[in-house]
Length: 424
Image 1 (cartoon, helix red, strand yellow):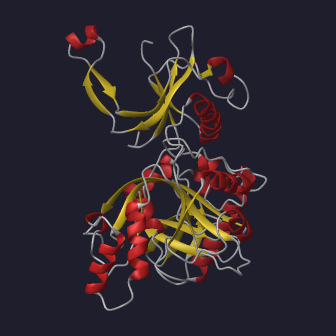
Image 2: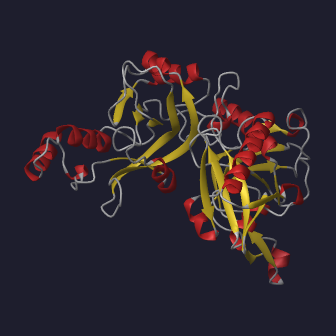
Image 3: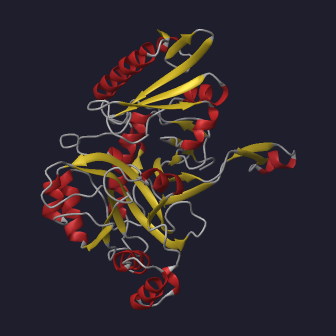
């Protein structure tokens, strides 16, 4: 069970059976003295994992009877084991129901959260995009690499601007005011939409990278990119939204680094309009926001998160594209995807062999679902190459990740696990 895996806690040992809690794992599994006294005296060991709950109830919020109704009825809930993996389709259905139940039960303590827009690029088209940095470091950030003064050391904007102006010859007024706003006006539990900028007369859709629940500000003086950062719980959205919706509910144009704050009322109207549910007053951003999009309005761009029909279409298109790509470069390509080897294509050119696993995505993000068999093959097979085709429906681009060292470019999160209370 990887650290950070999603879990649900089910009570089965009493008359009041059902789901009572949820959270994430905080450690690898480990052995320690058994929790049962009789076994502990004989020095027997038991398997443990650290947990952090985001919700825990004394009574089941989803009763066992509800779990035995479609769409959850295909899973066997009365298990006799300490924990079991849930298929992704069951996990997503359970997550949606759980969100509704916990939202009804919770009394919000963050009704004054502010809402913002923030961009990931250093400038216009062609400039470096820091979305991958946001995700890998679990932060949102702003910055001008030349500026090395921490705004948290200044009480007033004027003091900060005076210090920077004395140091740099270029006009720093916009940069300094943006950095100061980010550090002083943004607050913990604020919400930010992470998106591309758009112009007043733009007609193209606006790309939303994700949405974040904001944490503490810190100055990262050793950063190799932006130094002004805030901790964040980020949920990838990875979709295009009509620009007219942004202009109607939020702001006419978004060329600056950050915009806001917007009222929760205005922000909630925006998220309702684009078709996903966001409980903006909850203390944490729900991890399933990505999967809670209204399918009738969604133009989902992530890898592996559409319907079964859409996923199959993307997968087949990616296989065709990668096969042609290798053959054009002189490789002999064999499709071995049905043989459960942990990769899809066996490629040979002269004495060189590659084991190619193919992934496809409608969007531009490096995001996809990978099976345990594929992941294990990636970890141990020096011939393994993961070929990810992004923008599969428009201008396909192939991204190659060769060998186990390339796995450092990704964080791997299990979709869900089931944890079962022992002796309840």
